[in-house]
Image 1 (cartoon, rainbow, N blue to C red):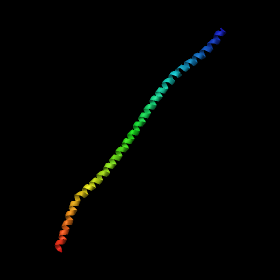
Image 2 (image 1 turned 30 degrees about the vertical axis):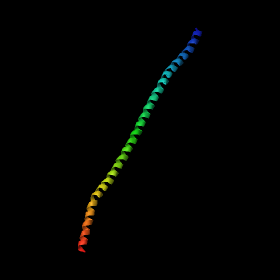
Image 3 (image 1 turned 90 degrees about the vertical axis):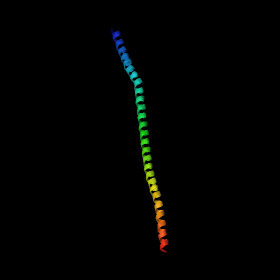
Image 4 (image 1 turned 180 degrees about the vertical axis):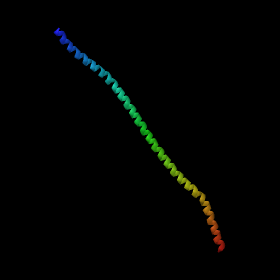
Length: 101
């Protein structure tokens, strides 16, 4: 019996080690795939954030450029509309001066 008792404690630690190794092996096999999946999702989310930020910067720049162009062209249009009026006034003033002399 003493030999049986000696054999059993030896068998139990081996079995426990085997059991303890088996769940770790399955967990470690599943854990990298979950970690990899989460990392890829994180990278994807970060990429989307960067792209959206870049798009927002581009929209701001375009809007600012459009406002500047609108001011510039509005001023050009205003001046273009006034040029004929100024020319006519100068001609009228020129004829008045000629008549007085």
